[in-house]
Image 1 (cartoon, protein in one colour):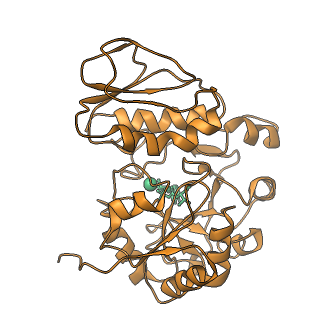
Image 2 (cartoon, rainbow, N blue to C red):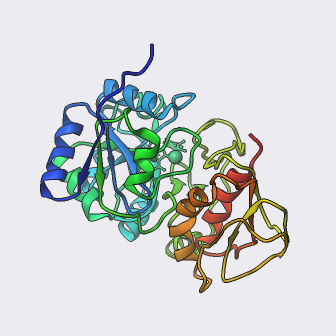
Length: 327
Ligand code: TXA
Ligand code: MG
Protein backbone atom coordinates (compact mmCIF):
# COMPACT_ATOMS: atom_id res chain seq x y z
CA UNK A 1 0.00 0.00 0.00
CA UNK A 2 1.38 3.42 -0.96
CA UNK A 3 1.91 5.91 1.86
CA UNK A 4 -0.69 8.70 1.56
CA UNK A 5 0.56 12.20 0.86
CA UNK A 6 -0.11 14.59 3.73
CA UNK A 7 0.19 18.37 4.01
CA UNK A 8 3.48 19.07 5.79
CA UNK A 9 3.45 22.32 7.79
CA UNK A 10 6.66 24.31 8.40
CA UNK A 11 6.26 25.92 11.82
CA UNK A 12 8.59 28.38 13.61
CA UNK A 13 9.89 27.19 16.98
CA UNK A 14 8.01 29.73 19.11
CA UNK A 15 5.71 28.94 22.02
CA UNK A 16 2.78 28.16 19.77
CA UNK A 17 4.89 26.04 17.40
CA UNK A 18 6.21 24.00 20.32
CA UNK A 19 2.69 23.49 21.71
CA UNK A 20 1.41 22.44 18.28
CA UNK A 21 4.31 19.99 17.88
CA UNK A 22 3.49 18.41 21.24
CA UNK A 23 -0.17 18.08 20.17
CA UNK A 24 0.88 16.34 16.94
CA UNK A 25 3.11 13.93 18.90
CA UNK A 26 0.48 13.23 21.57
CA UNK A 27 -2.08 12.39 18.90
CA UNK A 28 0.14 9.87 17.13
CA UNK A 29 1.52 12.15 14.38
CA UNK A 30 5.00 12.66 12.94
CA UNK A 31 6.91 15.89 13.59
CA UNK A 32 10.50 16.81 12.71
CA UNK A 33 12.11 18.58 15.64
CA UNK A 34 15.43 20.39 16.07
CA UNK A 35 18.10 18.92 18.33
CA UNK A 36 21.66 20.15 18.80
CA UNK A 37 23.01 17.23 16.71
CA UNK A 38 20.67 16.91 13.70
CA UNK A 39 16.91 17.29 13.13
CA UNK A 40 14.99 14.26 14.39
CA UNK A 41 11.78 12.73 13.03
CA UNK A 42 9.78 12.43 16.22
CA UNK A 43 6.83 10.31 17.28
CA UNK A 44 5.36 8.88 20.47
CA UNK A 45 7.67 5.98 21.39
CA UNK A 46 4.85 4.28 23.31
CA UNK A 47 2.49 4.19 20.29
CA UNK A 48 3.22 1.28 17.92
CA UNK A 49 0.99 2.76 15.21
CA UNK A 50 2.93 6.05 15.26
CA UNK A 51 6.25 4.17 15.21
CA UNK A 52 5.12 2.09 12.23
CA UNK A 53 4.16 5.28 10.37
CA UNK A 54 7.58 6.73 11.18
CA UNK A 55 9.42 3.72 9.69
CA UNK A 56 7.27 4.04 6.56
CA UNK A 57 7.88 7.80 6.23
CA UNK A 58 11.66 7.31 6.44
CA UNK A 59 11.54 4.36 4.08
CA UNK A 60 13.77 2.28 6.30
CA UNK A 61 14.37 -1.07 4.60
CA UNK A 62 14.04 -2.96 7.87
CA UNK A 63 12.84 -2.13 11.34
CA UNK A 64 15.77 -0.69 13.21
CA UNK A 65 15.71 0.34 16.87
CA UNK A 66 15.05 4.01 17.55
CA UNK A 67 16.44 6.29 20.23
CA UNK A 68 13.98 7.26 22.99
CA UNK A 69 14.35 10.96 23.76
CA UNK A 70 13.49 12.26 27.23
CA UNK A 71 14.03 15.62 28.94
CA UNK A 72 16.19 14.55 31.91
CA UNK A 73 17.92 11.76 33.83
CA UNK A 74 14.85 11.09 35.99
CA UNK A 75 12.68 10.49 32.91
CA UNK A 76 15.47 8.31 31.44
CA UNK A 77 15.40 6.11 34.53
CA UNK A 78 11.73 5.36 33.84
CA UNK A 79 12.69 4.03 30.36
CA UNK A 80 15.85 2.02 31.09
CA UNK A 81 17.88 0.49 33.91
CA UNK A 82 21.11 2.36 34.65
CA UNK A 83 24.20 0.68 36.07
CA UNK A 84 26.43 2.90 38.24
CA UNK A 85 28.66 3.50 35.19
CA UNK A 86 25.73 4.40 32.92
CA UNK A 87 24.45 6.69 35.64
CA UNK A 88 27.81 8.43 35.96
CA UNK A 89 27.92 9.01 32.17
CA UNK A 90 24.34 10.30 32.18
CA UNK A 91 25.08 12.79 34.93
CA UNK A 92 28.33 13.89 33.30
CA UNK A 93 27.04 14.45 29.76
CA UNK A 94 23.25 14.90 29.76
CA UNK A 95 21.74 16.95 28.37
CA UNK A 96 24.04 16.58 25.36
CA UNK A 97 25.02 14.68 22.21
CA UNK A 98 25.30 11.26 23.90
CA UNK A 99 23.01 8.21 23.58
CA UNK A 100 23.22 5.40 26.13
CA UNK A 101 22.04 1.85 25.36
CA UNK A 102 20.86 0.20 28.60
CA UNK A 103 18.55 -2.70 29.55
CA UNK A 104 14.99 -1.61 28.75
CA UNK A 105 12.11 -1.21 31.15
CA UNK A 106 9.95 -3.09 28.70
CA UNK A 107 6.56 -1.44 29.30
CA UNK A 108 7.97 2.12 28.97
CA UNK A 109 8.34 2.06 25.16
CA UNK A 110 6.73 0.13 22.33
CA UNK A 111 8.66 -3.04 21.39
CA UNK A 112 8.47 -1.83 17.78
CA UNK A 113 10.45 1.30 18.72
CA UNK A 114 13.13 -1.01 20.15
CA UNK A 115 12.87 -3.42 17.20
CA UNK A 116 12.09 -6.14 19.70
CA UNK A 117 15.38 -5.75 21.61
CA UNK A 118 15.57 -6.04 25.39
CA UNK A 119 17.82 -2.97 25.43
CA UNK A 120 16.84 0.63 24.73
CA UNK A 121 18.82 3.59 23.40
CA UNK A 122 18.11 6.78 25.38
CA UNK A 123 19.15 10.36 24.79
CA UNK A 124 18.56 13.66 26.61
CA UNK A 125 19.06 16.40 24.01
CA UNK A 126 20.36 19.81 25.09
CA UNK A 127 18.56 21.91 22.49
CA UNK A 128 16.12 24.18 24.37
CA UNK A 129 13.39 23.63 21.76
CA UNK A 130 13.81 19.84 21.94
CA UNK A 131 13.68 20.13 25.73
CA UNK A 132 10.44 22.16 25.56
CA UNK A 133 8.83 19.70 23.12
CA UNK A 134 9.79 16.70 25.27
CA UNK A 135 8.40 18.32 28.43
CA UNK A 136 5.15 19.25 26.68
CA UNK A 137 4.78 15.81 25.06
CA UNK A 138 5.38 14.20 28.46
CA UNK A 139 6.29 10.73 27.16
CA UNK A 140 9.37 9.12 25.56
CA UNK A 141 9.77 10.35 22.00
CA UNK A 142 11.35 8.16 19.32
CA UNK A 143 13.45 10.24 16.91
CA UNK A 144 15.76 8.96 14.19
CA UNK A 145 17.42 11.53 11.98
CA UNK A 146 14.73 13.25 9.86
CA UNK A 147 15.99 12.12 6.46
CA UNK A 148 14.86 9.45 4.07
CA UNK A 149 16.75 6.25 4.76
CA UNK A 150 20.24 6.34 3.26
CA UNK A 151 20.32 10.11 2.72
CA UNK A 152 22.51 12.67 4.44
CA UNK A 153 21.15 13.66 7.88
CA UNK A 154 19.37 17.05 8.03
CA UNK A 155 20.92 19.96 9.91
CA UNK A 156 18.28 22.51 8.81
CA UNK A 157 14.48 22.51 8.47
CA UNK A 158 15.00 23.00 4.73
CA UNK A 159 16.94 19.73 4.53
CA UNK A 160 14.02 17.98 6.27
CA UNK A 161 11.47 19.50 3.86
CA UNK A 162 13.60 18.39 0.89
CA UNK A 163 13.44 14.76 2.08
CA UNK A 164 10.10 14.36 3.87
CA UNK A 165 7.65 16.89 2.40
CA UNK A 166 4.29 15.13 2.05
CA UNK A 167 5.29 12.28 4.36
CA UNK A 168 5.09 13.94 7.80
CA UNK A 169 2.74 16.34 9.60
CA UNK A 170 5.04 19.13 10.69
CA UNK A 171 8.59 20.50 10.68
CA UNK A 172 9.53 22.68 13.66
CA UNK A 173 12.13 25.17 12.45
CA UNK A 174 14.72 26.43 14.95
CA UNK A 175 17.55 27.20 12.51
CA UNK A 176 20.69 25.15 11.85
CA UNK A 177 21.83 22.43 14.26
CA UNK A 178 24.89 23.47 16.27
CA UNK A 179 26.75 20.14 16.53
CA UNK A 180 25.92 18.85 13.04
CA UNK A 181 26.66 15.12 13.47
CA UNK A 182 24.52 12.58 15.34
CA UNK A 183 25.02 11.69 18.99
CA UNK A 184 27.76 9.35 20.15
CA UNK A 185 26.18 5.97 21.03
CA UNK A 186 27.57 3.92 23.92
CA UNK A 187 26.47 0.37 24.71
CA UNK A 188 26.23 0.30 28.50
CA UNK A 189 24.75 -3.20 28.79
CA UNK A 190 28.14 -4.84 29.48
CA UNK A 191 30.83 -4.27 32.10
CA UNK A 192 32.75 -1.65 30.13
CA UNK A 193 30.86 0.77 27.85
CA UNK A 194 31.55 0.27 24.13
CA UNK A 195 31.25 2.90 21.42
CA UNK A 196 28.67 1.76 18.84
CA UNK A 197 28.77 5.01 16.88
CA UNK A 198 31.21 7.92 17.14
CA UNK A 199 29.36 11.21 17.23
CA UNK A 200 29.02 14.68 18.68
CA UNK A 201 30.67 13.81 22.00
CA UNK A 202 34.36 12.97 21.57
CA UNK A 203 35.80 9.66 22.81
CA UNK A 204 38.48 11.55 24.78
CA UNK A 205 35.86 13.34 26.90
CA UNK A 206 34.07 10.09 27.72
CA UNK A 207 37.25 8.23 28.58
CA UNK A 208 38.34 11.12 30.84
CA UNK A 209 35.15 10.64 32.92
CA UNK A 210 35.43 6.83 32.93
CA UNK A 211 39.13 6.91 33.81
CA UNK A 212 39.81 4.16 31.25
CA UNK A 213 39.40 3.32 27.57
CA UNK A 214 36.05 2.43 26.03
CA UNK A 215 35.57 -1.19 24.95
CA UNK A 216 35.59 -2.20 21.30
CA UNK A 217 32.00 -3.15 20.33
CA UNK A 218 31.13 -6.58 18.97
CA UNK A 219 29.16 -4.82 16.27
CA UNK A 220 28.92 -1.20 15.22
CA UNK A 221 25.63 0.54 14.93
CA UNK A 222 24.43 1.18 11.43
CA UNK A 223 21.03 2.53 10.45
CA UNK A 224 20.46 0.07 7.61
CA UNK A 225 21.83 -3.15 9.08
CA UNK A 226 21.80 -2.88 12.87
CA UNK A 227 22.62 -6.56 13.40
CA UNK A 228 25.49 -6.85 10.90
CA UNK A 229 28.88 -6.79 12.62
CA UNK A 230 31.13 -4.04 11.36
CA UNK A 231 29.24 -3.59 8.12
CA UNK A 232 29.67 -0.19 6.56
CA UNK A 233 26.58 0.09 4.39
CA UNK A 234 26.45 3.07 2.10
CA UNK A 235 24.81 5.70 4.23
CA UNK A 236 24.81 9.46 4.72
CA UNK A 237 25.35 9.31 0.99
CA UNK A 238 25.30 12.09 -1.62
CA UNK A 239 24.21 11.05 -5.13
CA UNK A 240 27.70 11.41 -6.66
CA UNK A 241 30.76 9.31 -5.67
CA UNK A 242 32.81 10.51 -2.71
CA UNK A 243 36.61 10.00 -2.77
CA UNK A 244 38.50 10.19 0.53
CA UNK A 245 42.10 11.24 1.28
CA UNK A 246 42.28 12.81 -2.17
CA UNK A 247 45.66 14.25 -3.14
CA UNK A 248 44.89 15.36 -6.74
CA UNK A 249 41.60 16.67 -8.13
CA UNK A 250 40.09 14.95 -11.16
CA UNK A 251 38.13 16.79 -13.85
CA UNK A 252 34.56 17.57 -12.78
CA UNK A 253 35.17 17.02 -9.08
CA UNK A 254 34.10 19.31 -6.27
CA UNK A 255 36.47 19.75 -3.31
CA UNK A 256 35.57 19.29 0.35
CA UNK A 257 38.55 20.62 2.23
CA UNK A 258 39.66 21.56 5.75
CA UNK A 259 41.97 24.20 7.16
CA UNK A 260 42.47 25.94 3.82
CA UNK A 261 44.16 22.97 2.08
CA UNK A 262 44.27 23.20 -1.72
CA UNK A 263 44.81 20.23 -4.05
CA UNK A 264 46.73 19.99 -7.31
CA UNK A 265 45.18 18.67 -10.50
CA UNK A 266 42.00 19.85 -12.22
CA UNK A 267 40.35 23.03 -10.90
CA UNK A 268 37.49 22.18 -8.49
CA UNK A 269 33.96 22.69 -9.86
CA UNK A 270 32.97 23.89 -6.38
CA UNK A 271 34.78 24.12 -3.07
CA UNK A 272 33.65 24.08 0.56
CA UNK A 273 36.07 24.39 3.47
CA UNK A 274 34.70 22.59 6.55
CA UNK A 275 36.70 24.94 8.77
CA UNK A 276 39.22 27.40 7.33
CA UNK A 277 40.67 27.76 10.87
CA UNK A 278 41.09 23.98 11.21
CA UNK A 279 38.51 23.62 14.01
CA UNK A 280 36.96 20.11 14.12
CA UNK A 281 33.87 21.28 16.03
CA UNK A 282 33.11 23.79 13.26
CA UNK A 283 33.86 21.10 10.67
CA UNK A 284 31.31 18.71 12.20
CA UNK A 285 28.66 21.44 12.22
CA UNK A 286 29.23 22.13 8.51
CA UNK A 287 29.70 18.54 7.29
CA UNK A 288 26.20 17.52 6.15
CA UNK A 289 25.20 20.92 4.74
CA UNK A 290 28.41 21.06 2.69
CA UNK A 291 27.96 17.50 1.39
CA UNK A 292 24.51 18.56 0.16
CA UNK A 293 25.84 21.77 -1.37
CA UNK A 294 28.58 19.94 -3.27
CA UNK A 295 26.13 17.28 -4.49
CA UNK A 296 24.98 19.58 -7.30
CA UNK A 297 24.38 19.50 -11.06
CA UNK A 298 27.67 19.61 -12.97
CA UNK A 299 29.61 17.87 -10.20
CA UNK A 300 30.87 14.38 -11.14
CA UNK A 301 32.26 13.49 -7.72
CA UNK A 302 33.36 14.91 -4.38
CA UNK A 303 37.05 14.75 -3.42
CA UNK A 304 37.73 15.04 0.30
CA UNK A 305 41.08 15.91 1.90
CA UNK A 306 42.45 13.99 4.89
CA UNK A 307 41.31 15.36 8.28
CA UNK A 308 42.73 15.03 11.82
CA UNK A 309 41.46 11.91 13.65
CA UNK A 310 41.17 13.25 17.22
CA UNK A 311 38.10 14.75 18.93
CA UNK A 312 35.11 15.10 16.58
CA UNK A 313 37.43 14.01 13.76
CA UNK A 314 36.46 10.41 14.63
CA UNK A 315 32.75 11.04 13.92
CA UNK A 316 33.53 13.07 10.79
CA UNK A 317 35.76 10.27 9.43
CA UNK A 318 33.04 7.69 10.19
CA UNK A 319 30.36 9.65 8.28
CA UNK A 320 32.71 10.35 5.36
CA UNK A 321 33.64 6.65 5.16
CA UNK A 322 29.95 5.77 4.92
CA UNK A 323 29.36 8.49 2.33
CA UNK A 324 32.19 6.99 0.26
CA UNK A 325 31.13 3.34 0.67
CA UNK A 326 30.13 1.47 -2.51
CA UNK A 327 26.42 1.57 -3.25
O1 TXA B 1 21.84 12.63 17.33
C1 TXA B 1 21.09 11.65 17.22
O2 TXA B 1 21.30 10.58 17.82
C2 TXA B 1 19.86 11.80 16.32
C3 TXA B 1 18.97 12.88 16.94
C4 TXA B 1 17.70 13.09 16.17
O3 TXA B 1 18.72 12.58 18.29
N1 TXA B 1 19.18 10.56 16.17
C5 TXA B 1 19.68 9.54 15.42
O4 TXA B 1 18.85 8.43 15.34
O5 TXA B 1 20.76 9.60 14.88
P1 TXA B 1 19.05 7.26 14.25
O6 TXA B 1 17.81 6.42 14.35
O7 TXA B 1 19.35 7.84 12.94
O8 TXA B 1 20.23 6.44 14.81
C6 TXA B 1 20.03 5.66 15.98
C7 TXA B 1 20.97 4.49 16.00
C8 TXA B 1 20.62 3.44 14.96
O9 TXA B 1 21.78 3.15 14.20
C9 TXA B 1 20.21 2.25 15.80
O10 TXA B 1 20.61 1.03 15.22
C10 TXA B 1 20.90 2.49 17.11
O11 TXA B 1 20.87 3.87 17.28
N2 TXA B 1 20.20 1.87 18.22
C11 TXA B 1 18.99 2.17 18.70
N3 TXA B 1 18.64 1.35 19.70
C12 TXA B 1 19.66 0.50 19.88
C13 TXA B 1 19.91 -0.59 20.76
N4 TXA B 1 19.02 -0.98 21.67
N5 TXA B 1 21.09 -1.22 20.65
C14 TXA B 1 22.01 -0.83 19.73
N6 TXA B 1 21.83 0.19 18.87
C15 TXA B 1 20.68 0.83 18.93
MG1 MG C 1 20.10 8.31 10.81
